[in-house]
Length: 324
Image (cartoon, rainbow, N blue to C red; front, side, top):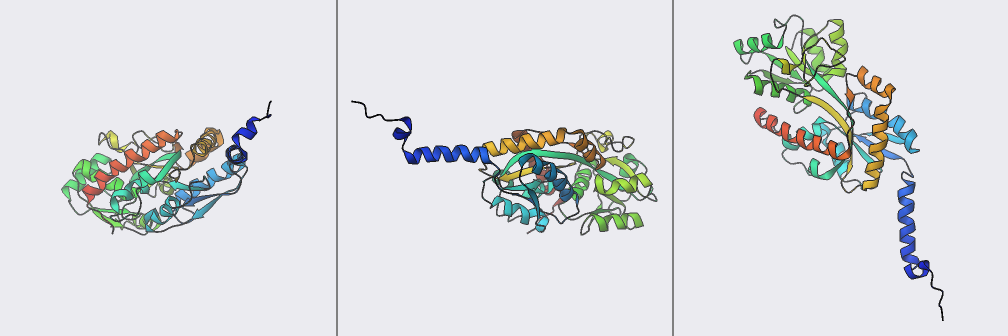
């Protein structure tokens, strides 16, 4: 006699419900708005990059991707919020060089960035630019090195703050050239640029987007860009590496999420972001900001983060910079 047991009956209502729920979750993501944490105030480079990606990403996902600016503690407040968020795909983090630098700069972080944030996708890489006031005697990197060695401790190196990529680019330069400058940290790139333009500071390794207008107008003299290759935005400006072989210090930006975020969610976001980066209009927009698309797999972006964290650990140790 047959009892007419169906596969559904054998599995049981609870198991079937779990299978159905799992399939629905995978198909439904995202089913509500996504928060993208940026650890800086509105208007800066990181905020601008997040916003120009968030708009097309929202359209592709069918849900609003909104920016949540959480500035403070050198990007660590926003990062900690992301680390402690539910790993459900509804909290993202704008990842940038400060995350790699802070791992060794801050003594008492409550998280390990490489361990606690899942890498999703890159966005862009852009150079910093080594620039001086036009009245400064050096017109090339080699002349600058000669001037520094002839005047040890007399050249003021401005930065946008202790531990920023602007600061660490200068520290790497000192480590690789044997020069010694006086670091003068400011509360952001704006005040540092103001003093450089006025001739009150000697050199700045600034992010290209905020300085490119001053260089093009002649208000500042560009000695070099810090990437391994010349920037398409300033093709006549040499790289530092053309004078100091092996030097490379670029600003890179991407997307992360809390660890244990589902692999299928990471794969979906990686695919959508990389397709956004393939759009010629986006390539042009990033180029206008001095950057190039950083199109990577999630694993490749994770390796970049780990490599950069180790690289900057050595520079932080050289500089002696520490923040409690």
